[in-house]
Image (cartoon, rainbow, N blue to C red):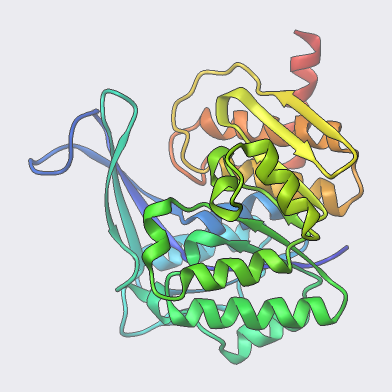
Length: 314
């Protein structure tokens, strides 16, 4: 099976128990939970039985080891996750508002994540990979951009493939080097997985469908438009499919898009047909929102099969 590598941030997430606005008063918190978009993605991918590795950096602290131990336990190659003696593991404090929006306090850029780069261990796992997954939100430091572009070149020259989840907001595009890096990644992407309107950030077109077709015309092989609670749409220039989401109780949506993307990628690499693959990915997203904690909702292939069989029975 093809080995997948991703490069990016690892954090712990600490969540407010009660909804409210911000953190300007003492409140009850729960956590820490292992987190970080690329970390959630690679954990779900490992649970689907796909060989995979992550390049990252954590501090030599409990938060860092919490993440390493979870990823290792779930089957991720953690040999390229550097443990930094002089930096602390990244963190994200999260509080939901009553309207469903969230307030965050991040420590990512100035944490151990700022030390991610091309170590010898990173080069070794990149050399073993046949597929690179890029999370656009990770491309905010020179070290990560350098490592991602190096991996992109190495994987492509060997005939490998690339998947790309932008996971960004338009306000992020002012970060130095981000726009250029995003364009370089998209130019080499095989499977593009934006969330709804994100696709408009990569095309002059004004509708999602027109933007998707424009991007396909540039050489991207397939696009999956993640549409949250509505479902997901697949386009490849021939097929255009939509599969609705499953109706489930939402407890915590953080990480659901990462679980969806990893499950779809596992199926795509295995040659699964698009309709079945979308349904499986939607199932992974549904399982993810049903558990509190961003990585707590990742699911094994067996757990996903049980969930999907129950939906058919219903």
